Amino acid sequence: PTVIPNPPYQRTVIVMDVKTTELMQGSSSTTSSNDPTTVAVDYLRDAISFLLQQRDTFSSMGSTELEVVLLVESPGGAVYEYGLAAYQVQRLRDANDAPKYNTDEPMSTGASLPIKVTVCVDKVAASGGYMIASQANPGQLIAAPFATVGSIGVLREQLNFHDALSKFGVKPLLLKSGFAKAPISTYGKVTDENIKVVQKDLDRVHEAFKNLVETSRKGSTVALANIDREVGTGQIFLAQDAYALGMVDQLMTSDEYIGRRIMAGDRVLKLHKYDRSKFGLSFPSPLELLLRQLDRGEPWKKSLAIFKNVCGSALKLAGPLGIMTVLQHQTVARYDEHSPFNPHRNS
Image (tube, rainbow, N blue to C red):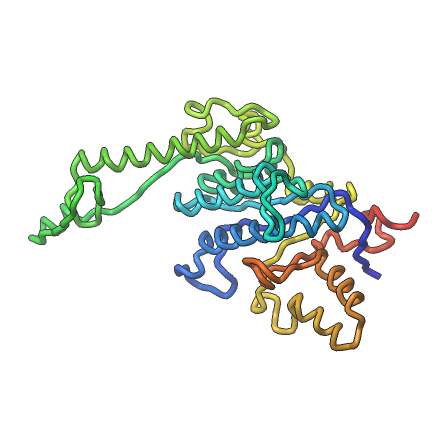
């Protein structure tokens, strides 16, 4: 039979996806509500808030360390979205140094459970995707050898029809106040001064991007190469080449890394966004699993123990995620009691 062991693990490892390459299930086109980047960023910010709220829960279950493994897959996109996503990851990474706030206790410094952020890149983390990946703890940015990383640069692309319309006697009008307001538009006339304004904006964002990466990569396994001449030029790299430049710390797939954590005896969990349309109407929510046991007349404490075992953790229904998120054992962590991969099997 398949069992889920429940010994006092020293480390809890939470695995979660950060993908901007897929539309929501069942969608055929991108809209403002299902844009993959927007969905991923919104989920990331909620998930990180959820994990920070659950630190005491993991600590009470015997863990002395919490590691969050982000499976990043993204070619990049809008600066404002990826900048927000990167700082959400930074918020998690730097939580050990931030004051802890509990509504029942006065403000105090220090964290109840150390948090380590690991990023795994199997396919691509370029531009904004690398901005997110670079926020891993020193030594914890892992990539498959042929993954694509880098592209530390900024671009803007836009069509302008002013001259074409003028040839047909159409006079586009663009009224604005402020010389730097919308310097390049679809129909307005474009001057050299307009182009200089836009280029200045791009250069400013590029510098901020490079500074963020350079600051975050300090203390990593391999020193980061010159940010201006070698890695911050907008070029993309194979991870095996990026390793020598200090852009990644280890070369392996996410499966290899997660497998190592399991073999080390860590509790490995996968964080899922609870979506009934994805799991199917017959798949119960975490709350329903508990209520079913209560309906059968099970004692409350026994029901809670069952609930913990099914979810892999004590799930608090309060917070930004509510029952939208459930912690479950990852498939590879569902040990058979006689499996050689089960470090807790009886010899």
